[in-house]
Image (cartoon, rainbow over all chains, first blue to last red; front, top):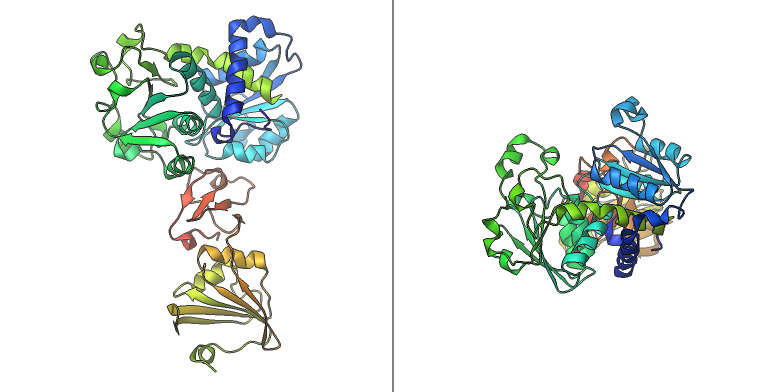
Length: 300
Length: 152
């Protein structure tokens, strides 16, 4: 992968993606065997929004590669609280670290940061924009379970504000995938993503109900309706809990349907499914480490 | 002398922007950041009869030759505009507007969650699409009423 930064999944070619996934497979086979690979690596973690999986898996990935991390900590305990701009913050941190992993509530934050620093910036989520490193681990998981070609995938829930959805949709245009988007009218894909999918000639269908499309799916990618992204509580209540997947829902699904979720979940997937063959979401989360190891390895 | 030229006085040196969609003349001035504070004489013709357009607007800016880059920004709202550069009352150059690849510092992003609206030291920048423009930061696409989003 020949990129200075990872800002969106759009910038990745199929060859870029496959190179990272292949490398991730090597790391996954023996994650403890690469401690000498990047002993000089110092990775800055700048999370302006809460995170568990993304932050911890980047930290784990850096340490598995022999490196270490410096963590900005919470916004409350940083100079951001004093009104420091993002542009200033990343210019300071650039002097401390070899790469910056950035999560920020504003869309376009990673793009802006990348214009101010020379070290690689990894977009770990910019508001309702993009989350490309999540996409790489999603693709890795899909490749393990269903394969990335001749794929029929349903993407369900918050398609408007879901950054994991936007990045995944972009990346899947590089593969032979039929993308079915299932959401209430108010949470359909934003115009910018529709534009990109159209430009890429993607095979896309939109639905309000899961029923029609479920029997044909290889993968069902479920997302949380994100309360924190809604402009008002009333709008959130109208759509909260609209889709909930349980054993009864899956009576019409194929036996080999793989259910994915970027997590955290609230009530979109019933816990009764956790021990079934369908549940892929925890191994999906675990895949974050080898995939982020491979991503860091490709950027450094 | 045509009816149009009678309505809008001739200029000695400067730029005439003709074939502007009727009603867009004031937006043309806003887009070019011409508000009179530079001291240049500006004449407007609005809803002037036109054989090809039915009605059109005309803008004349005295004493200032607008650059191609400045003029290309006009393509966002006046794609059919024709430009005459005037020297000593004669048309010295004729130009057309061409859509630029990007416009920089002209439009503000309407998305309140865009990083360009968060107090950062950044000039809003848009990529120009075949229809509308797209924020280079948050990727919001704006197709209608672009002049509502001019940087104040």
